[in-house]
Length: 82
Image (tube, rainbow, N blue to C red; front, side, top):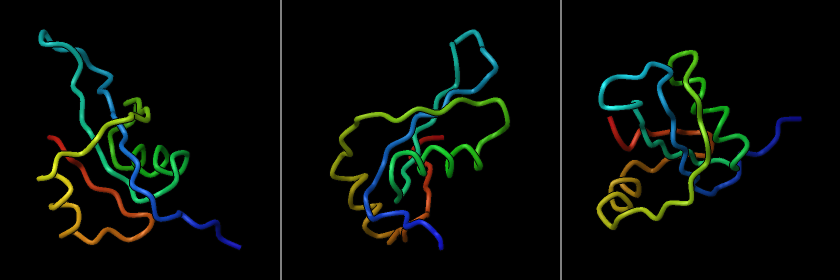
């Protein structure tokens, strides 16, 4: 039987494995999933070798409205930053 993703939004920060002069490349992703599942979902979407960690970050009102408009389903992910 499949495990439920849950209905919570989890913020994940991913860091590139290559370092530029400006420092590591970071992206922030949202997953509609439980924290441990969110890490796995996001890691499957980024290049191999990147690292991911959960962050306790509040979304801005603008980000929250955008996510509400996307209507993410359990298991969906969305990149907040480029």
